[in-house]
Length: 375
Image (cartoon, rainbow, N blue to C red; front, side, top):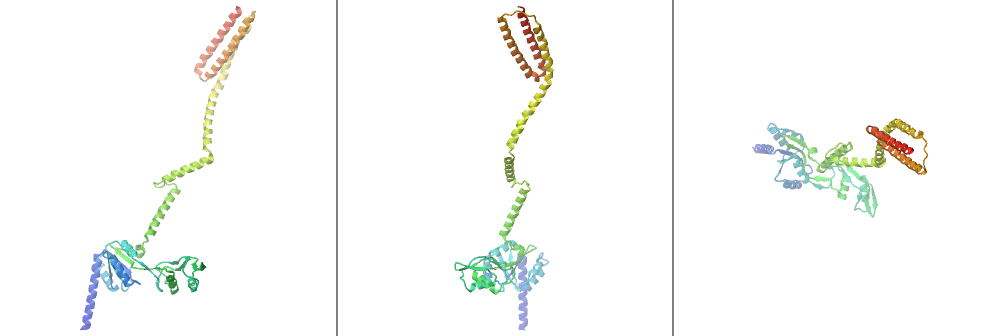
């Protein structure tokens, strides 16, 4: 009878435990499973106290948790997938109404460093950096050399010459490495709640996704942004961010080309070439008009013939002086006429008018000479 009563009590306890787990799973939208390996009970209690009231932590048996998940697979979408992550006899469950990523961030903040123990798995690559130590020369040099560290003695102290990777992530830490790490004051282990998986409203997130290094994530975004900017700038693709730099670069390149080619002199040469072409165009009609001037000169010579053929007349000295002056005046007037004719040779409409006037002036002068000769 006693055995039956004990069995009945055990079964009732298990039923109650399964029901309580089911209620918590139905109540909270986010459920996480934690790896409690190497987690001291005192540390767990401290973390539980810090996370209250936003986070509820519950420890149970893996078999009872599986029963609760099977019974809720039709009521809560995708909850049965958590069974694939139950790898411990006494899993630790976390229930919260916050998001899965916020939960993971809070758990990481509440972790504390601890010295490594022999047989523990390295949470990440353990590297001993180069630099001075507090040890004086002695047996410690041998211990450091056994794990592959290169050392030297400087100023009476042992100095590690090069960085050394002593344990890779996931490898077991042996006695020698654990001893050296503790002597050097290196605490590679992190004591805290390690979130293995989280269920968030039907989605399952593993620790690789949840344990995001914010600094690295932000640096990756900055790197991507800078690379995109450099690419756009190098291919001269204008954007709001790089348009000013592209203009500045174009101005600087233009100035460098100008200093090498001396554009100023080229522009001056081109400016000087322009009037030369104009002069050539103006000179061309002058050359064409010259042959037309020949008949005008012949007319002048024809009209001068009677002056040569006029009868000889005795002239006094005073009259000869007057004639010389008049001839000089005539020459000057003829030169003026020729200049005016050349200036206005570009205007074909007025050419005939000026030539007529010149002929009239010549005839008048000739008439005056004839009259004076008669007297």
